[in-house]
Image (cartoon, rainbow, N blue to C red; front, top):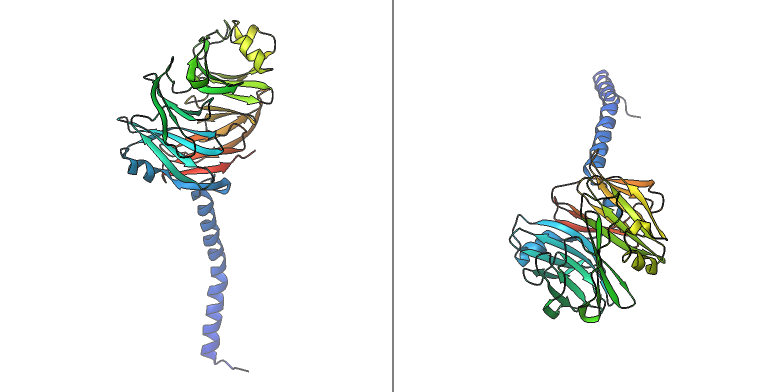
Length: 336
């Protein structure tokens, strides 16, 4: 046994006392570190399935340093699944195609050939178009090499055109005020008759953003405005076509609707899981609403940074987030 002198015992007791008193402070320190870590880490990180440095890819392609990402979407064609970012530096437009299998940037289109809207077309190509001219470009989905274009079509691709394909016909859909517009195109983008029925005499939208999805046999159309938003449900595609030819839309049999809150910057997405709206009331949240009742189902707080953008898959199982602070594009699982 080791014996301590009186001096040694005194020193030992002092050390023990300091250690005992210091424990609560150490605990508080570690607790504070954990608290800071929880609050510094973005809320979405636990749901990330893959990420890519989108900022570097866009700058490398020639987009200016002050670019912003306007829109994110999922585009699938020919067995190839892409996340598509529409970005601009105000001097030129760019489309970045990210292969979702490996989360790699496969192609960046910049300037001529890039579009406000990017979609899979009725013939299996990926098509781009802009809101300021009627030029259409088509690309092979496997390589994103140019197939054809520029080829003129009947109408411009607006900033917020949504699309449905049924029986080989492509329907481009957009909204303006009280009117919903639908332009059909058959194979090789041969245009049909433009339809533009009004919604109803009591309903007018302050915004001009829409999102459409096939939900089973039903068609869901989300109209997003600054003062209100709502979802129209058509019991079948045949009902949808009839309603688009018979104004007012809400006066047709088989058509129902629910009213939703407004979205501060008129951002919304229609999915088979429900309608999602972006709100900035108390911080930034993405809120999911039931498509039939309009009831709020769930919400997800976002650590919103400048130049952030979002997009949702049609089936409602995945979403995209561009984080302007890090310059990364993330593929995530939805939170519901």
